[in-house]
Image (tube, rainbow, N blue to C red; front, side):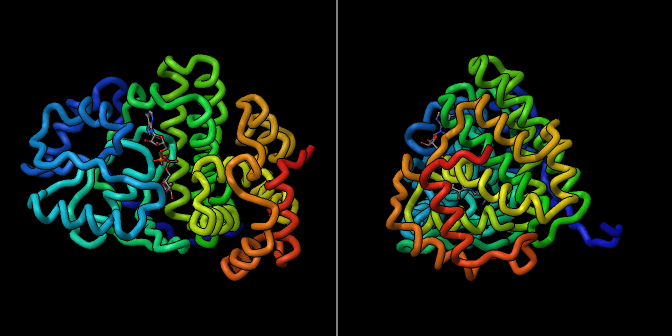
Length: 353
Ligand code: NAD
């Protein structure tokens, strides 16, 4: 690739401090001069939210969070923010919680401090998502990029291992797709490669000792890098497929990414030699696909869409909905038949070795 590109880095404070979220969050709130904070966390994240918000002026503790941010959930949250006259949004939780904070920021411009407790990476992107009926809409807006992120690996210890693995593979997917996404450049690719390196070391350590912090810290670091690369490079084929599946069939986000990724890599890898070389090196493997499959076996990753609510009868409709979204410059030209084949293999969990 010739060194001719344009790259934009986003301004955002990033704090890594295991075990210190409360004091670091208080510093960031002070820095932004906020006095009326809306703390957003789902019911299961309530305890985490209490742990991070002990030193800040909380005006509203808000729990009405739902996956893929349904429009009516966003509207209720916006109304609550206005009613309590809040001046800052603090989201403590997974991508769904971060997504709700973004939905409020999109229409109000309120600043966000994000304390992520999964490896979804939404905190490091300017991408928002809303779902109306079975249609998920995403967009890009600088107002939704959190002003600061506080990463505290201790807060992710309670994330069960299967969810940690799926979420970590969601981050690996950001990295892999960043290699050929529409706006990719050598900076994105370098960040994505470092993300894969951190994730392929962090995730096995996490699985071996889920209560220990080093594996979880590496995984958070990889998740952050993955999202930075993805935010800059944009959505490649993998994200387009998962986006349609998530919106149309309400499939769980992280698991869908974890299952689809190897099939997209098998499709695109042979037509993208530069990406293939970088990915193989990042996975420390002769071939990228072998590196990814080896990691998935080591982690006992989710295998088949049929296990998470997608049926064989859903395949034709899904393929037809994905086709118009396939990026024009995807390394491999893709037809409806290719998409149906890919979805059938992913539905069945077909072995790629
Ligand atoms: P999630 O936020 O729905 O969390 C999954 C489950 O884990 C939830 O029940 C949550 O309460 C629980 N949980 C979270 N942290 C926990 C912890 N530390 N301990 C115990 N339980 C915990 O799932 P996700 O995969 O983090 O996020 C998915 C959502 O994020 C999707 O809607 C997706 O579209 C969005 N997303 C957006 C972007 C973006 O750039 N806009 C990027 C990635 C993901």
